[in-house]
Image (tube, rainbow, N blue to C red; front, side, top):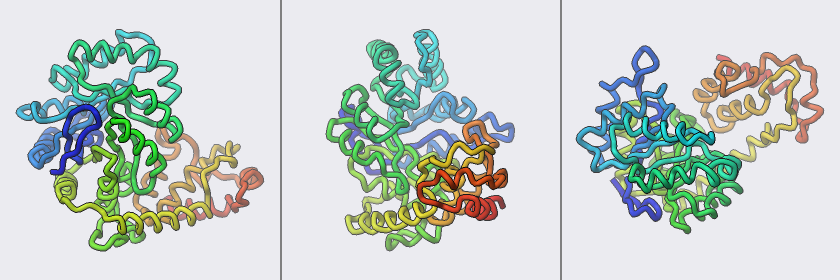
Length: 370
């Protein structure tokens, strides 16, 4: 397993990390299947993976316990990362999260402790004036080793957070389909902040086959391998986290990360050129500007077109159909599907690209609702 420096922490980390968000579950849907997950962790650890990332809410709040079970016999060689989701002003509530995580993980110290889901507003209103003090106190007590954040915000606000100098490590999104944070990643590396990438396979989008992306680079036939190699080719990144849910995924990802070969400059240029072409094609249909919203029937127009583009432009039809089905069904995916359109035309009057939205909504629903 190839190792990399984790910024200024002094830690040497495996370039592949184990993301413990999508562990196999028992049939009750609330408990991690230890008979499957523990051998997966151990196979990864034995292959050289030494970074594992979890969080309070993952796997119906059972992920931390599953990681703690898997750490037995391995703790001294594994770097453990988890997160505190509390953004209130009650120190006792924040501290309770920390103490619960220590107990669930069965560790005396958390190596990388994150403010979970940070943005610039949260940083300025809560983290900087309040919870950063609690973090430092926990560090002084030896309960955590390094202060970190998981980031969900704009490229501009990533730069602002980097320039505060506060976090030792930042976990963020970056993949072959979404490279908007690339400049921030480079700046973080320059300033000695370790970068951990979540979603190298696009949150599962790049985990399936795609005739558009397969064979883009000679010698790489599978999309997940292409996606992981693309992230690992960026030397400003310390760890690429993969949310592995099967032993097959563990073995495949470990094999890729153990291979010294990364994408060449010619390979990355080939990818860049092709992705630029595809992005331009996608923008012929919808740029996601949201000017069409709100819809009087609550049709999630930009969401629908983004998912339609996953199939139509990138060939990721299985994923596109899967996530289309969640619209209006999950709390985090509000809105209505395309078949709720009453064809009033209000959206088309507001679209700066003059897209025939009603017609494309019909096409999207026909392609995705299967």
